[in-house]
Image (cartoon, rainbow, N blue to C red; front, side, top):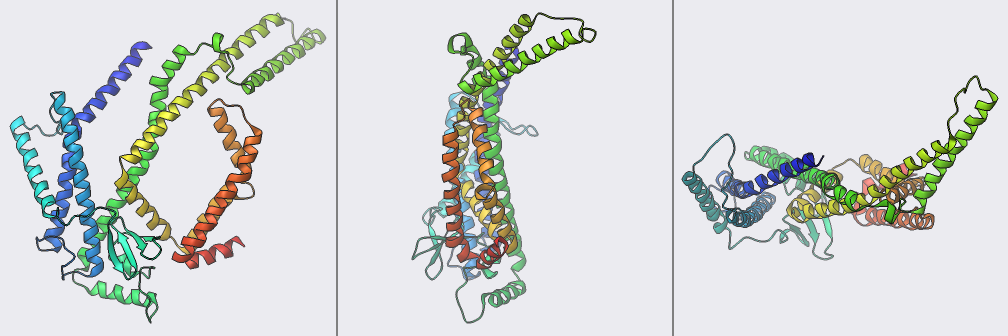
Amino acid sequence: MRSSFLTSVSRYLRGANQWLLQTPERALDQAYEAALMIKAIEDQHFDGGKISKKSTKHSENVLIYFQSELNKYLKFAEVRLTEFRASRIIVDSTNSTLYHRRSSYISTHEQAATVLEKLAFIDEILDRYKSSSVRSTALVPLNQGTNVNLSGTVIDQNTGDRVYNQALNPDNADDGSILDKTGVLPRSILGTLNRIKRDLDPNSEEQVVQTFRFSKAKTLISIRLVLLLIIVPLLTQQISKAFIVGPLVDQFWQPEQVGIFLNSELEESALREFNVFRERLEFDRFLSVAQPERFPETTDAETLLQDKAEELAEIYSKLSARAIKNVFADLLSAGAFAIVLLTNRRGLETLRSFIDETVYGLSDSAKAFIIILFTDMFVGFHSPHGWEVLLEGLAKHFGLPTNRDFNFLFIATFPVILDTVFKYWIFRYLNRISPSAVATYKNMNE
C-alpha cells in the first residue's frame, strides 16, 4: 500500500515537473499565435498597415470589431510574454531546457534561434501598437450616449449601467437590437435594409468568415473555461482526499482518544441500528423456542451483540474520519477553483459575453420557459423540500449535526431574497432588453 502511494505521488510530481518545463514554450507559442492573428488582420483587411479606426475602407461597426480583436490579441500576447519570462526564470534556475514536441527534435542552437525569431516578431507587432494600445476595460464610442468596452459590453454614459453584451460583429448590430438608434422607421425594417446592403457588399464573405472565426474562438474559450471550473476542483478534491488529506487524517485520527462519534446525531443513528439488531435477535430466539424444528441451533446472544457493537464502532469511526477529510479536501478544492478564476480573468470576460449572447439570443418562449423553470425550482411552492434535503446533505457531508431551526430560518429567508433578485433582474434588465420575453413570461406564468 505504501509503495503504491509513493509511486502515485512520484508519477504526479513527474507530470507536474514536465508541465512546468513545457510552460515557457507553451506561453511563447501562444503569444506568437496572437501576433500572427494581428498580422493576418492587417494583411487581409488593412493592406498590411496598422489596424486603425481612421481607416475609410470599412464601416464603423466593422472597425469596432477589428479594434476589439486587436486589443484582445495584444492583451493576450502581453500576458503570455509575462508568463514566458516568469516561467523561464524558474526553468533556468533548475538548469533545464525547454521541452519540444515529440514529433520533432531541435538542437540547442536551432532552438535558441527559433525562440529569438518568435520574440523579435512579437516585439515588432507589439511595438507597432504600444503607443495606441488601451486596456481591455477602455470604452469605445458606439452611439450617442452609449459606449462599449472591448469585451463587448455596452455601457450607458448617463447611468453607467451595462445595457447589452454582444460579439461586436456586424450581424448583432443589424438585427434590431437595442443598440440601434431611434428613427422614423422601425428598427426591424432598418435591420433588414442593412442586412441586404451587407449581403451585396463584395467584402461580406470575408466579414462572415471573420465573424465565424471570432464566434468559434469565443465558444472554445468558454467551453474550456467551464470544463476547467468543473474538472480542476473535482480532481483536486478527489486527489487530495485520496493521497494527502486521507493518509494524514488516518494517521492522526485516534477514536479511542477523541471518541468514535463526531456528533450526537451519529451516535443516535448507531444506537438505533444496535437496538434494531438486538430486537431481531430476541425475535429469532422466541421463534426458536416456539418452533425448534425450524431453528435447531442457538447462538450466544451476548457474543452476537458484542460483534455488532464492534462493527458499528468501526463503521461510524470511518464516517467521522471521512467527514473530517471532506472538510479539508473541499477547502483545497475551493482554493483550486479560486486559482482558476484568478488566472483566467480574460476567459471570464469571454465566458460572460458568451453566456449573454446565448441567453439573449434565445427566443421569447425559451427565455420565459427557463425563467419559470429556475424560479419554480429554487423559489417555488415545492422548493423548501429541496432546500431542506440540500442542507441536510451538506451537514452530513461535513459531519455536522442537523440544526432544524437553522434550516427553517434559511428556507424562510434565502428563497425570498432569491425571488426578489429574479424579479429585479426581470424588471431592470430583461424588461429593457426584451420586453416581448417579459410579456411571454407573464402570460405563461398566469
